[in-house]
Length: 229
Image (tube, rainbow, N blue to C red; front, side, top):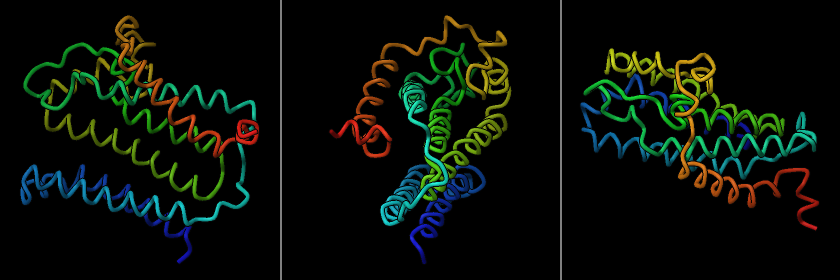
């Protein structure tokens, strides 16, 4: 088995396991294993499949890619990754719809949740699209494509599952927020004043972006040769 095929299988296992255990198999597994047992099994499967992905990524050769993002595009790509980092950190702070929103009506959308009701998955979608735009290598397309599929399908699955389990509070939340970033702000369903991510998200996201960029970008970008001189 080639390393690229192994990477494709590992990515398929990682994405497939996440989607299956989060949606169609979740209720059955929770009933049999209990909440803590399910969380343990979910974490174990995620760790194994992610480890396989990392190993296969390192083993896969990266010959001439189909495309490489032009030099002028890299600063814009980095700016988009900063937005993704702020969305990611902001998604961890005071989620108004997490996790027991069915106990009552969900409050107004604030921070990154006014931008999109799926800020974490939106950050992964941005990450995947940016990386696809920068390199058309086989291993990059496999991993970024897998993460893109997982984030999109996961967001759709969350909306469907929560609308079924939570009911009217979630449907009301959906009507006041948007799947697509900034859509609810542009059509007036959410207020721009409420969309300020907050200093924790801004500072935390910027620090996270700076740390990852300082390590990662010189290794993969056309700027790497310049930065290493």
